[in-house]
Image (cartoon, rainbow, N blue to C red; front, side, top):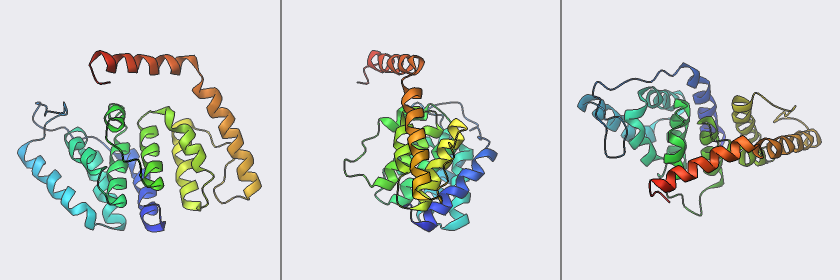
Amino acid sequence: MLHRAPALVLVLSLACAACVTTLQSPRASTNSSGWLEPSPALRQQIEDEAKRLPWTHGMDRVETIHWFASVGEPAYPTLLAMVLDPRPDVAGAALAALGATKDSRLVEALRELPWPDSEHNDLALERARTLLRLGDWQMVPRLVAGLRDERVMTRALCIQALDEATKERFGFDPRGEPAAREASVKRWEAWAKNRLSDPLLAEAKATKKTSRAARGDD
């Protein structure tokens, strides 16, 4: 998925994310998953766009990702189903749309999906970027590891996600010399180790697990 063309689409979709304004469905009811139910007309639009997405390319796909993100909650069940699509580019586009919503409620929903053990490494990185954009800082180490990827585009996407979430770069240049990149990655690793050992983060994580156990999710 992170070959040049699909990766460029994801970069452009991230750039569009700041302009996303979630649309509200005229109906206030929720579906079986607890998400806001779309009106019949919007439901048909969502289904049509989902069918069309695999056949989109370039800016057309970026616009589709942007549309799904702007619809927001009524489109979540469709997008969550699409992230398990066997086609990595389709799954990646759905993840990009979910990440662009910045809706932290999606973190738990994404974590509960039955991800395959043999998942494509690029798609795992895309999921990590999405979860970080949604507020899951446990994805930081995975993205820091991605800074060592041999492909420039992959390194660029990882540092973009880290920069967006943390406002830090530690001098990392995805096109820099190997020695300079490695020095920067080590600074990232030290920062992540200190940041993720923060007692407040540990407490928040424990609270989340307790909440899930109380609902019988575990």
